[in-house]
Length: 406
Image (cartoon, rainbow, N blue to C red):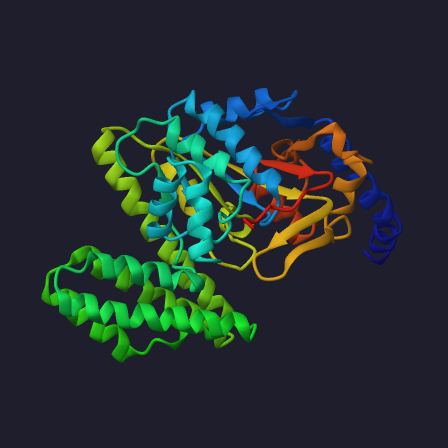
C-alpha cells in the first residue's frame, strides 16, 4: 500500500499537468469572438448566442458593474431575443425606479439627464449616458402590454428622495401630502449632508425610525392609498436589508436581499403569465453573484438559481452568461473612474487559453459547457462554480468606463 502511495505522489504532478492541458485545450476549442456594431452583435459567436436564446426561456447576464461594454452586449442580446419571443428585461433596481426608467427611456435622453441631475445617485447602474440606448431599445421596440422593464432589487439607499417624492404625489389628502413632504424635505437635507461629509451611510433611509414609518403608513392607510403603502413597505424592507450590512451580518444581508428579488420576480412573472396566457421569456442583467446557477459566491441560492429551477420545472432551460473584463477602467458612482487589472484573479488556464488579445479583436466568448465532461473533483471551488454556474463566459480585453451625465 505504501509503495502504491509513493508512486501516486510521484505521478501526481504529471497527472495534474495533464489535466490542466486538457482543460486549456478544451477552452481553446470553444473560443469565439463577439463585437458590437450599430446596435447589434457580430462575430462567429453570435450563432452560439442565438441558438441559446432560441432554446431557453430565461437568459441572465451576470455583469461586472461599471463598464460600458455590458450595456452594449445587453442591447445586442435583447435584439436577438426579441426575434425569439423575449418581451421582458429584469434589472438590478427596485420596481419603482424601473418604472421611472421605462417612462424616461421612451423620451429623449435629456429626460434621463434631467432626472439624474435632480436625483443624483438615485439610479444604481443606469444613471449614465451609455445604457440609454439599451433601455430605449427595450421600451421603444417592444409593444408588449404591461411593464417591459422589471425592477427586482431592493430600494437603493440613495433613491429615498425620489420614492418619497412619488409617495407625496400619490397622496389623496392634504394631511398625507404634508407628512410625505416633511419626510421628503428631510431626505433631501440628509442626502446633501451625506455628500458633503462623504458619508453614504448617513442618508435618510438609514436614519428613518419605526416611528417615521408608522407616521407615513398610518397617513396613507387612512386614505386607502395602496400604491403609496407598497412603496413605503419596500423602503422599510430595504432599510432592514441595509441594516444587516451595517451590522456586519453579510450572509443575512445577502439572504434577505435575495429573497426580496425572488419574491418580486415571481410577482412580475405570474402577472405576465396570466396576461399573456403563456410562459414569459425574460432576460436579466444583474451582478454575476446574483446570476449564478446553484450555490452563489455568497453561499446562498440566489435569483440565478431560482430561474434555473423554474425553467426546469416548466420543461425548459435557462442560459447563464458571465460578463467581465480582463483589464481597463470602470466607473464607480462615488469614486469615479478606477483602473483595474483582473488577469491575476482569473483562472490561469483561462488566461493561457485566451492568449494575448487586443481590444480591437473584439470580445472573447467561451462556451464553458464542454468542460463539464472533464473530471472536476479536484478543481478549485471557484473554477467549478464558474463552469457549472454559467454556460458562457464573455471577457472584454480592455473595458471602458460608463459615462455619467455632466
